Structures are given as C-alpha cells and as structure tokens.
Length: 150
Image 1 (cartoon, helix red, strand yellow):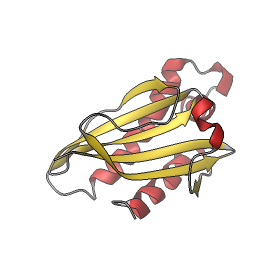
Image 2 (cartoon, one colour):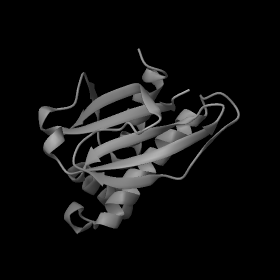
Image 3 (cartoon, one colour):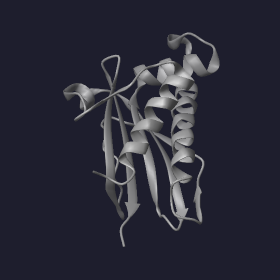
C-alpha cells in the first residue's frame, strides 16, 4: 500500500462528488484507452518536511464536466482556460487536504496545469510513492503522489 493511499482515495472521491457531483470509483488500473485521450495534468508541489508533488490527470471530457459544474456553463461551452482552472482547483483541494496529513512544516504551491497525451506523472528527481486510478462515467482519472528522490 502506498503512502496515504486510503486517505488520498477518500479525498478524491469526496472532492469529485462534493464539487462536481460526479461519482468516481477506484479501479486497479487505468482504462486501456487512457493513453489515447487528450489529458490535463494539474500538479501542486509540497515543500518543507515533505518534498514532492501531487498530480491529478483527467481527460478533457471530465475536465469539461468539471468546468461546467464550477463555472455554470455547458460542458461544450467551456474553453481550455476553464478546463485548466477546473482541474487545477481539484488538484488544489486534494493537495490542501493531503497537506494536513504531511509532516510539519509543509507548504503546498498553487497548481500548475499542462496538457498531455498520456497519464505519466513522474518527473526527473521524483519517485512515485502512491498512484491511484479511478473511473468516472467510463473515463479515467489518475492521482499520483510523488516524493523528491533523496
């Protein structure tokens, strides 16, 4: 079991339901088609006693639904900036909840959001410590906790 796996699962399910009214189910691995989807990756960084990052990946279909719920528009009316803001806010809320469980002192950055064609989350100098896959209405979500390599 990865670091804070149970808590990260609960945070993800609660945030997607409370904020967007979408139910997410934990799955063993991402759906096969995930690598072919256009995705957004929102990353918040942790600094202090815990050095690392949290990355939330989802495809643009889910990002559109999130943006519509957050900004009061139709999913097909949301532009790329609204999609980025919505996924960034989900990562921000997840990271904020997670920060409360990390060793003190720890701080969390504002989210940065990039577009990807796959669900890779690691970066040079970081290692994956927890990686969770979820299904939401047939679309994949991946949440990854990374730690800076010693």
